[in-house]
Image 1 (cartoon, rainbow, N blue to C red):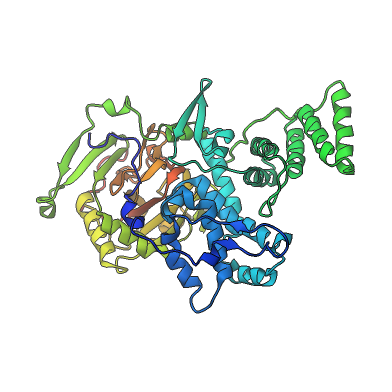
Image 2: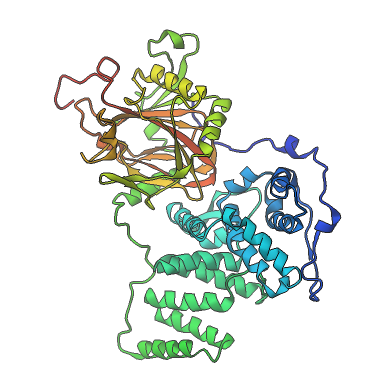
Length: 552
């Protein structure tokens, strides 16, 4: 077999990018002066090796003006994140680092700017913040990042306490196991965990809110009630939300215990006093109401959740499946003269459905070129909803469409896809190249690529259904992100620069149910793929002729 490793490393050699950089910030920007005049100690901000990567960004946003306030904002971010990575891309590869950065950009910097500690130069601070506010993450981005962490928690069965300590760990048969161990841990604060728990709480998802709020309370306690101006929550806030979450899950005794602790900190809180009285009465009654305990919310649309998550956790390692002697690797020319000198390395992964992996299908330069072309057009991915298309929680990614006329690299990829598949991929017989980027916990739950309804937008091209899928992996990931075939019971890890191909339809035009597949959540890394969907019409004289049997 060509492919042996379950994990495909995404690390890059970064030493030559940073080692020679010696530029320094002006000394007066190493310390924040806002608090000194008010009697508070200045904030000492150490210089970070991440600075060279952001220097160009700083010069862009401060061009033509002596904007030390904005510079201070950036140094604040470097101070928080700089020792975790050697470049912006590395930071975003870790979902914990990405979440905390989004949180700092959306809420923590706002809290600092409008705090009493920022009285000196307050107007300048707030004015600069408002100028940059449109480019900062929105509340929806922050909530989406929190939901992404909860999705990773569920699909990979991760412990919240492990995530808070920067480790991706699950417990199997009572034994803790590291799913992935980062080289540098990203610790979550009590306020970080409170925000995740609050997002779950506001969605009435008390299964997750209990776990994240319990961790928040533990961390707030451990911090000795020290307050930071960047925090949005406090120990009292976490206790308040946790008590009601316990109550909603039927754990009245824990709701009472947490409420009593909250009263210790806020003894005159009339609402909590009433809650304590209610909880005591419920416990004194013969049969206090039960909420069924802490149970994970069900899914209204995902009937195969158990299989899907199991395949995601194996991350492409099904040794029994790959012992099939009928599966093979070869150098493939497809009878095309253009491939005789440079045949494609083909690996047959499955026979039912037929799934083929083409190794080294694109070069690094081609992959980077496609990603660069798509960057400006990336939008939230949508799914078919009747005759229309709409965003959905079961598909979290951003995508853009590239015509073959967009650049010669796209045209070359279309030609190469046609060579190895023998199919007509020119529009409208093939859809434009779709480039997809997955964010924190980005995924696509089990689905078919072919249309299952006659009203589907797939039929707008009037070239029939999607007969085949050709997906190119434009990047690697360190963990997660596998493609799982649910009914066929196997998953394929991300293989950088490779491409995966399968038929969506039988020769009689009926959909192949064995092609139900999913894009597993990305645990660590930045996943990019390019999809080429090929339609029925236009293939009459190629590789996909209609069969003679109506059941073929």
